Length: 88
Image 1 (cartoon, rainbow, N blue to C red):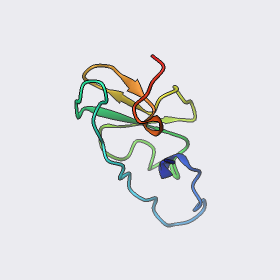
Image 2: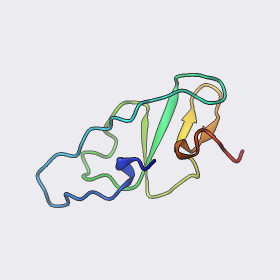
Image 3: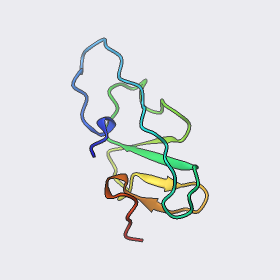
Image 4: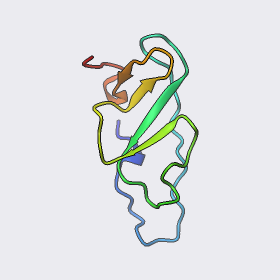
């Protein structure tokens, strides 16, 4: 599944606001905690969008750490596209 927030914006130069971050938070596949942090990879559509969204969303820009989810409780990291699998 491709997260639309990871794609380059198609409205560069447009006055239309970017869509809000609306991906469900989910739960940790290891411990079941709901304290999941989403890492949004890629450039936001505007400087105002960088850092916007729920407090559990972390904008990491173009540097991909190898995962796009982490658990604040147990420290587990995973790629949501791989259904929670990780190469720890």
